[in-house]
Structures are given as structure tokens and as C-alpha cells.
Length: 481
Image 1 (tube, helix red, strand yellow):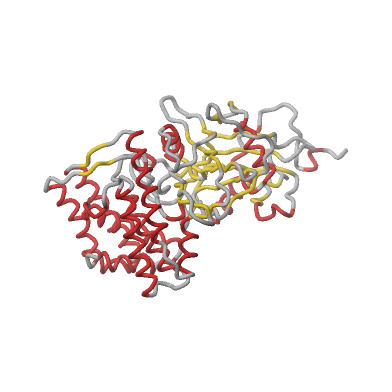
Image 2 (cartoon, rainbow, N blue to C red):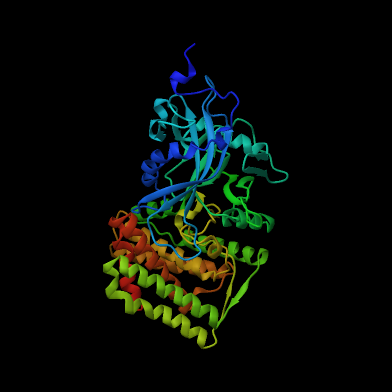
């Protein structure tokens, strides 16, 4: 038998556990500095990584047993970057990393390879992204099936639910701010990549809707969290397991299919509006609401103006439209000064066609998914009651996106399709018990304008080829349309 020391993989015989090894993170840091900027879910694109802080490390499966199977290592790592930050803000973004550790990476997992540490407790091992590894994904499901505590992590299962054993796992689709794993076409686990201490709205709202018996949202089956590191702090939500809806397509795919076939989409949009209203009604019953009056409306308008100025500094093409866009925010503030008020409640927070599901063939019930909210916004803001109209405005922007990015590329027929579809969605929303968007023009225009400004910044940073889509809306909204 070769000397373990000569292989670079010392056996686990006594000594401190891997999670306590002081050189664990320093040995991984060079690999992570190269790998993280290439991930879609990494929020710090374009900014220099200046350091890492290890917040927790948990071996879900032993990682350095000589001759043993691949291990599974869970890390929470704060990534520090060269950028200005607000007073009191954390020194960097926190990411959840699940790392597979083994002597070799099979060819099928070559795209998941992160690298080989040249020192530290994992020296000589191959480290890969475990969320692309079906075998290790299955182990994560087993931890949820048998809830309890391991290391810094707590695994929970909803009372009265069952999780079948040994379901095969696979990653679903492209990564965004999270990675979704499908198990046996039965369950889907959303694993958050960038995380913040506190209750994630995706877990909070889906549990509240399940308790309210709202059938439009899959009820959580299980979830896992990281325990708070300091007294009085909140645990960090790390992942949520829900039923998988096989045979469904998302609204974006369905809308593009309709556009490519020059087919009407108004009936689908109307029923989607009704579904949105049902979810909003259930949230308003289940969770606290608030009233927005002059101070709150002026504050909301001020935040929208600030985002406009920030975006205009970053995207020069927006600057000629600032004055016209600002009138939408000024009108909202003026409505508050004139005695206007609106109700605020918990909402989806990032509603668009890609966050909706319906059977791909034939009519069927719409479902809403992914209640995390916009991941770039602070968690406290995402959990704050807001006007339900914000979700409506976001969906209207999504219909416009589909019309301008589909096969027809925004021709006259597609733009008319968008107009009729938007109207049908608003009509369905009012019929479903929601506030008729036509009765709140100041609120609607302000939130649609704010969403378009957000889209301009996002596309300029991540998808410059798509920038003409929100810029077309900017020109319309700046002219009061």
C-alpha cells in the first residue's frame, strides 16, 4: 500500500475535523477566486475579489477518507471585493457552496470541476460543484428526508409529509440566483447560492400560502438552514424542497410559442391575471398588511428617483430620458401629498412569465413559483409589505419583453399582441379580486417605470444585446405612455 503522505491525501486518523482545519479556506481561496466570477449566480461580476472569510464548514459526507467514496463539504463563505459599501453594510456577499471532494472527477462531471488545492487538508483531491453531481444531490435529499442537525446546519421536514428514499437527482435548467435540483420528477429543491441571515421569502410566503390553502403555489415539503452565528441573530435559509410539477411549461416559453405561431394569448393572460389576484388575496389574509400614505409614498418615490440617477450614471443612453421618467415618480409623490393612499401587503416581488407554470398542452391551472423576490435587493426590503400593483407592473413588462424578443422581434403585430395581452391580464386580475390597475394610474406608471429602469441596468451589465428591449419602454414611458 502506498504511503498516504506521498499521494497528497492523508487519512482521517485523529486530529481536528476538516471543518476546523485553519488552512481549509486559504487552500481553496485561489480556486474560488478563479471559479466564482464565471458563475451566473455570482453577484460581484466586474469587481476584484480581495479576500474570503469562512463563516461555517460542515462535512455532510467525510471528504478525506483514504479509499472512501467522494465526500460532500458544505461551506458558507463571505466574498470580499474592492467596492465602496454603505455604513453598517456587511463587508461582502455570503455564498453557499456545496463541494464534492474525491481523488478524481469522472468525465461526465468535468464541467463541474473547480480545481485541486495545492495545500491544506484537501491537498491532492479534486474539488467540484456538488450541485451538478447527481449522486451527491441524492445525499442532500436524504438529509432532508431524515431531518435533524449536522454541524452548523439544521434540516426540517413539514409535519405530515413524506420523502421517498433514493430518488435520483439532476440539476434543472440554467442557473440564476439559485440552483434547482429535480428528484425523480417528484420533488424540486431550490438551493440558494447567495444567502443572507433571515427567513427567505420563498420559504416564508409558500408556507403562508399553504396554510391559507391557496392551490396556486406548491407547498413546501422540507427545507434547511444554517444556525445563527451570534445570539439574537436569525438563521439563514439555504434551500426549500417542494413538489415538482411535471409536464408544465413556464409562461415565458408559452408566450414565445404563441408569438412564433402568431397565436392569440389573451385567454391565457386573463387566467394568469386571475391566478395572480388569488395569490395576492391569500397573502393579504395570511400576513400583515399596511397603508401607504404621504410619508411612505414620498419615500417610495425618492427611492425610485435615486435608482434612476444611479442607473443614468452607469448607462449613458438613459440620460436623455431622465426628466421624462422622473415625472412618473413625481406624480406618485404628489398623489400622496394630495391625500392619496394605497394598501400594502406581501407580494411575489419578482413576478414575470418565467415565474409561472401551466401544463404545456391544453388548458390548465396556472401556478406561481419562486417567491424569493429580487435577490439583489436587501432581504429586509423584500420582506416589507408593498403595493400589489408592483407585481402587476412587473408582469406587464414581461409581456412586453416577450413581444420584443420573440421571433418577430417587435414588429407591429407583436406590439399589438403585447397591448392586448397586457389588457387581458389586467382584466383577469380585477376579475380575480385584485385592485383594478386602471384605478391606480400613478402607482402603475411609477412601478412600471421603476421596473424598466431596473431592466436597463441589468441588461447593460449582463446582456447588452437585450438592452434595446427596456430602452424601448423607457422611450414610451418618458413620453407619458
